[in-house]
Image (cartoon, rainbow, N blue to C red; front, side):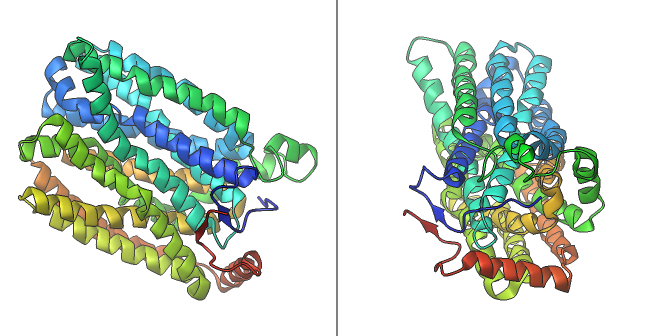
Length: 450
């Protein structure tokens, strides 16, 4: 798929350009999705007591929250190719808001489990965010655009850890007991998601020159059938070994981040004898690093591409992944609160830079099957979270042991970057496209307020 008039600069304050409206709405929508997706996580200590959940049951709900997202991400990628990111996001946000509010009706483990399973579909929002920025921005800044939109979206994982306990506390101040308080607290993100879905439909468009149906009517975009259909697009992506290598890589970075989002609050609460609010604040620091860390991963990817081309992007991805794995192993061995927080922030920096670096490579794998590639790689993040979830549901493995084993797995996964290679012809073509997009602009890859 060839989209014309992509932006070669990221002008943060220019809301008139459709590229920048898509940028801001995509990261904001993804950010808000975290309130529904992981809004219950910082309240799990209360939910555990209310519903009488065991550690194994909590582990199963963690797995449920990310398992269904694997399938939905695979579907959402090719769906974006067919109906466009604007309508895809609108439907996901509006329909996804329903189970977020309905989780408050759960009175047993089974009902709670099913609610978290349904809520997990919201995690497919990431695929739409990355798809939308990929079709809106040129090669010289696409890594930065993808990383920043996803990073500011992932920031929702941190703000959720901080704000949901405060919302819960505010509800308790009204005289409501804890059993009802956590249920009412989940209504807030549900309402916000529904409103965001309406806003996305009203204020964005699929591509720089219009929506996909308009482009197809003008003959500027092929019809979504035959060789450009959903099945053909998915087959083209699925038979590429590089796509599955990036699937594993993303499983070992975003999958790890999702796991930490799910367990961080209860980990600090149980291991360092903290209050629920304090544990949530500390856990929130991990997610708050997304305000700049994932963007750095994309910025460095674009900078490495200036001189090293696509090989430079892949080399940077390997370095970020290796450092992430080592930092995670160190974090698992910390027993002093201040040291644990410090190493957690270093680990957070590298895990999020690795995510940004991954999607600095993704747009160049197969432009004609972009949606399918984004969907498969994005699903890898949730597959990684599901796999990691089994480490933390076992009664015989402590959280510290689970984190250490996870760090080893990340180091091994970093070797998958060796399978991501490009032909000399593609390297030359993309390097030329990079120079063309750069043109006379300076500071490529940097964010601009103009």
